[in-house]
Image (cartoon, rainbow, N blue to C red; front, top):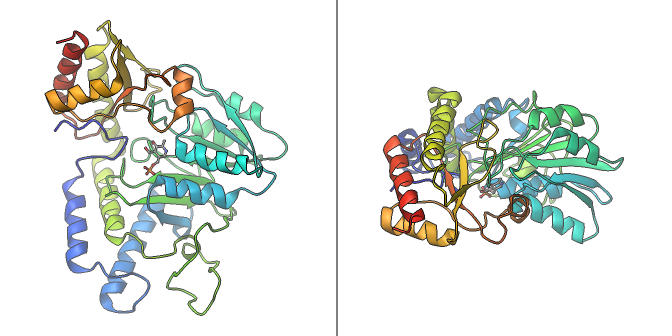
Length: 379
Ligand SMILES: Cc1ncc(COP(=O)(O)O)c(C=O)c1O
């Protein structure tokens, strides 16, 4: 099935990921860090090895501050609820996913924090100047996405990181950018990086990560067994145990490690160029079709996510036709980002979203172009 829903979860996964997960499940998927037997130690070492490689991959300083989570939402909740204190002011943007909006709104509605939401333009662009202008004396956090899941708009994260350094902490939602765009938390002055494993890192679902720069301390939102300091009734201080209670998704983390190997061997630039080539092919194939509306910057400020509508048709109907008549997988409707839809003017209609991966072929895009043109012409 031509699969263009990689912004939700990437598919297919590289063979090396399948092989690594199967090998783990068959041979050593014991509970890490709890029992001292050889299998448990092997699992523990394999997870630590992945942690080190992941930290390197994002340009982090300390692998022990690279925490495994279960998805990007989990990372964002751990960071947002763990970092913010009563009386804090937060700057965020209108292009955020609900996994940023909702934790922030929850805290705002409880009267704990003040919130400023910086508005994007019709293509979802946000400028550094807008962010800096929104800072106040009590701003403790700037929280923004690296790349919009609706329009693919790439945000000026490095510029913002440098501009606000020393004024507020910087939290970046890298759900759409990890494995797609280069990320270096130290160079970009990012204090907390939240990301999933199951999208651009090619890991199975149930994987994610959170990097916390040295000097940033989080309160825990979850407490429990860590396999360390078991005599204590209270949560340990040491990282990553402090933020990693309960049995981890060991086989998923091993898959994430294999995903990193695939990215490193192929090269993130090669992956990105291929994804962008496919998106460009699709834009070129449909942009002269009068009834098709395209969203986003449609230039180098856009990553491999393309949202569109067919004039006069519901996005769900278009997606249904693509699926049923052509066997093409896309996502319709609202994309868990209501303010972003409002920003680009699609809150009432939703959009049909195509999100590309390295594995999409030229033939698949040709098929999608042909299908969209036919649907737009009422065939
Ligand atoms: C920008 C953005 N942030 C956060 C998330 C949440 O990610 P997850 O599904 O891994 O919790 C998504 C998911 O699509 C997203 O696109």
